[in-house]
Length: 140
Image 1 (cartoon, helix red, strand yellow):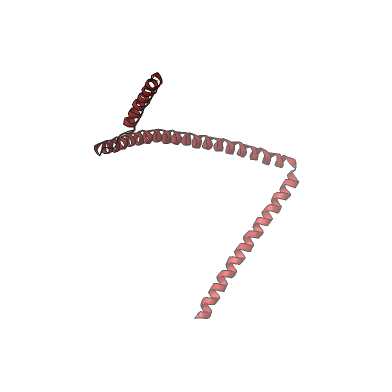
Image 2 (tube, helix red, strand yellow; image 1 turned 135 degrees about the vertical axis):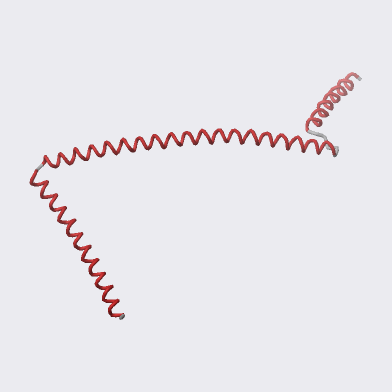
């Protein structure tokens, strides 16, 4: 039984290899035939091939340009949407930050810690008093 299975596998491998060799031979012969045909029909056939290649190249470039333009358009739209979204997020973050600052300032004020504005006002008053004392001290 094992010999039968092994023989079937060998036969299948041999058949596949034979098919590959046959296909490769056909490709080789097709290439030789094309070379011979070009040689026989001369440069006219070659010029026809060049023209056909140019037509395909022109069409291909047009398709690539269209696809590229469409892709760039989509990228620009996405950039615009991201920029708009970024602006909205920044506005929301500013609102959250201001609310946080307000809450923290309120909490600090409740426990008796002066705000930055209070310190600046007091500092300005101290500067005025210092200047006034210096003028009084000079006059005496």
